[in-house]
Amino acid sequence: MKKLLSVLLSVAVIATLLTGCGGAGGASGAKKVGVSMPTKDLQRWNQDGANMEKELKAAGYEVDLQFANNDVQQQVSQIENMISSGCSVLVIAAIEGSSLGEALDMAKKANIPVIAYDRLIMNSDAVSYYATFDNFKVGVVQGEYVVKSLDLDNAAGPFNIEFTAGDPGDNNAGFFFNGAMSVVQKYIDDGKLNVVSGQKTFEEVATPTWGTDVAQSRAENILSSFYADGTELDVWLCSNDSTALGVTNALAANYTGKYPIITGQDCDIENTKNMIAGKQSMSVFKDTRTLASQVVKMVGQILSNQTVDVNDTTTYDNGVKVVPSFLCEPVFADANNYKQILIDSGYYTEDQLK
Image 1 (cartoon, helix red, strand yellow):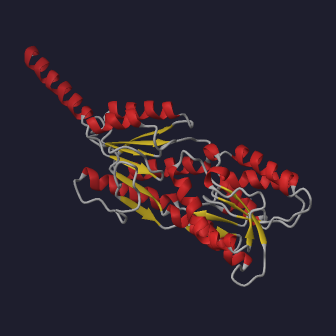
Image 2 (cartoon, rainbow, N blue to C red):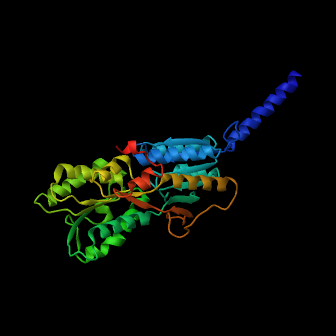
Image 3 (cartoon, helix red, strand yellow):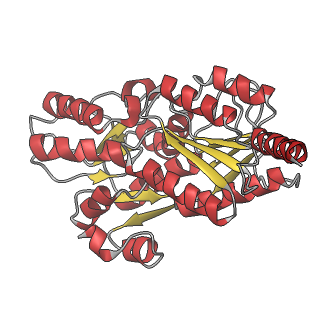
């Protein structure tokens, strides 16, 4: 009897180990999904991670959610640990799109599908799918807001404009900037929009790490160099809210002229408060709940061997392959519609914006 019990126990242990190795997620039998977010320093990544974890758990998956503190090596290590611990699918928002080679090679060898989340992972054939918002359209929405606000098709002008773009290591940053320029470039060419600083290429206006302090420092230099003589600024087109916050900080300390139009993206709490107070004009809203729901759906389709929903198979070339993508639609919020877009939808409560 003891020998029989010993054999049965050994079989049970082996079965448990086999279950864990395949990504089944332990005794519960739930598939395990690894979610790698770049940092907790920006509000949007905290929200994305929380939304993803909530949605995946509600769908019955075990979740390994990790934040990498904007440290590429830490993200690589975290992803490798996710692979070793039996994750069946990886959802990765990369710190730098081209810096995850080792971890992605490991995922490919283990036949683990990878969904690039919001930021395209570059130069790797290990990326199975890409889920994001229409990032070029984000910039288009910002540019169109500027055109409408200044009535550029009818007003005489010229109007003065400056640009602050995003992190050169983030593939999305170029899409945001190019989308905006696709709208406003003709007005620059016609002389209706004047870039006083002369800084209008992506390389000149990019902001490493999307840092508020980096954006603020550059904005302070521009204001002191080109606007200290009383020249008025009409627009500062910022690609996202963390950079917009840096620009508004710089304006508060270094500018006394007519307050400019300021664009943003993400509808962060502090920036939404600034919109209500008239310190920021708009922010493109990308409801991360929508994106999280889509990614959970894609995870389920992958694990069930179903056809995965995509709506773009031509745009996002990562240097090795065109990655099948699902693009969600962005909208903008401003002081006129933020209650409908942000509060009525349950994204924020009124108390959060006081």
